[in-house]
Image (cartoon, rainbow, N blue to C red; front, side):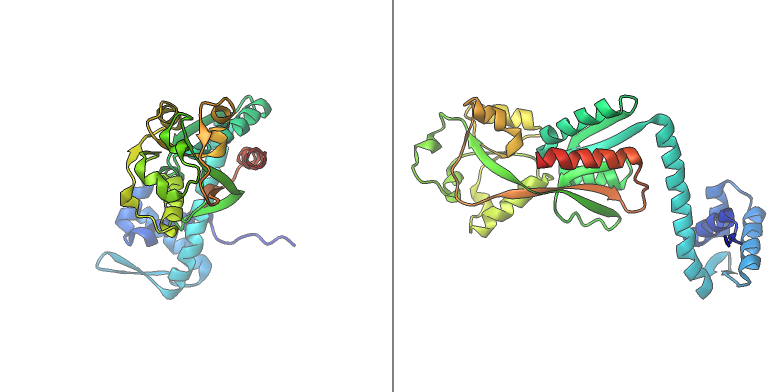
Length: 300
């Protein structure tokens, strides 16, 4: 036997706003309702629940113990309704917004190409930025999902889906660089040469610098040149302006053509890749398909 809910979902939404704002007046303004209308919704909910859910003292709302408990469920109902609306609008617009960490731009490009072949009617909107900026874009719903370097971004409202356990990070330089005159090379040898790096918000930079710190190297010994794009950094390295730090797929072509050379530095440096999404967001079928294609691209 199917049980029919006795609570009106909109009553719960109104209750959520009253509990969140701690004010009937403020809730009415947010909902574009009159104060009597808000009060009516609350009274209907209390009648259905047979419990008092809030007290009003000097125009200030205080939730009862029952109200505090119900508020959590009301918040979930509200967020699910918002997610349902977003799902419908996304299906109407047929679009998918993706934020991509700069380190993974070339790998994600192959997944994006396959996606566009499968879904030619879907508008794929891509933004490339450092991982920390991508995480903020996901949090603020500026993009539907973000492809970032695996690490803790300290944002409880986001959840991660692992798409790569660890891709190799390499240090490269122009074949004409004096550094290749050394027969044996250690990380400490890099202190004498400028490093071409992403901005401070680059997660790849932070992960690799932790590796340097583990080797006992002081970061202030390095001369860093910050760039905001993989392409610009690569061109500086090719012209002999310094040493570059790259996810290997971003320099495979240049290395194979002899324009760049990998430094034989001791130690294995790897970074994983995650997809970030909001915990309260609905993951649409087209987003799930894109994630599946990403996993394939990183495995290849």
